[in-house]
Image (cartoon, rainbow, N blue to C red; front, side, top):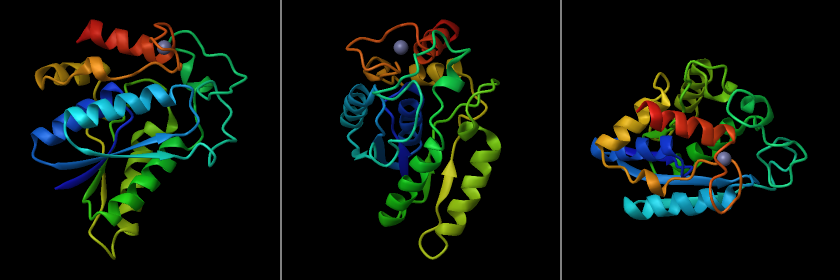
Length: 209
Ligand SMILES: [Zn+2]
């Protein structure tokens, strides 16, 4: 099975990569600079992980394509970064982000005759983001099936939907994933801020794992 995996450099996509490789998949990574403040840290983390697992990584700059996105994640945001996870989904929602990522990954996937796009989204029993929810994932899976019918069939594979962050971290520990190489923080600081929604969830996940 050849898989194109959305590799952000965070925990979920990294553990998913390790899981798929352990299952025998051949994986190609794709990562995006969409103008987020953490773009450099995420890119470096994605490359560290790609190097660790000796996979190809296609890093793509789409920041000019989504320059209109106005939210706390962006490098020049007017919106302050919320403290903790509870307020984060509204302020940090990038409209349609995962739809854009998956569409580009699918275009790449069809070019390299991949069978699936791997997406490490966690729904997590919270309100979360619309583009991580089950209905979105099912609809995009069906859309990929349609769009790839004249080539090799392409599907969306999102096995962590029902998992918690702690479940993902536990699997990562079992698979000896170098979690210290991942980057989670929404900020572009040289060290994780420790208080944003992503840092908050990362810490809660480690505490519960
Ligand atoms: Zn942070």
